[in-house]
Image (cartoon, rainbow, N blue to C red):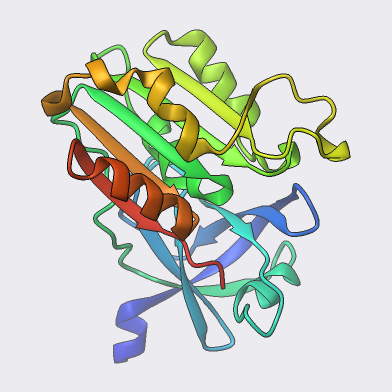
Length: 240
């Protein structure tokens, strides 16, 4: 076995779902199973270009699910190539997913703040928790400019309706845009609304952790305001 074969396995795209003209989901069947912890990322390659993507799937799912945003050239390198791939296309995967952005089970209160594709690791975490065996309180916040960017709106809404320990709060930052006329939910930037909803001033700081994942500006803002007051972990997404 060559050194490259030790580090890489091939993956076949088995399913694709387009949400908008620049957001889509793909499900990849790896030739060798990837062992990962919810919240980690896998490294995807095509034509010798590689990029990390947070895994949406839970570890017990057969396919690797990804939520991808297209970044056109010249800024985007891999996403324009992935965008052209269809069911049956072959890509490469590094065998070892990585990342320290994991669910911190030692805390009771979990505040998850995301923008668009930044919700991916939180979906993996939520899918993996056995709520019958735990006593966590979880808030999942997702911010987007347009309502068609909420890739897991139905799934997370359904989970929160069935489980009182999970609260999903999507928020739209451009409520007056014609594309968002049907929106009846929260409005405003996600990094500006979660404080009051979670009542952080009265929160048990030692037993609460804030996660921030997504656009670097959002993550930096949340980090600046709360990383010195609460347990905090972040993952900044750089689109290309």
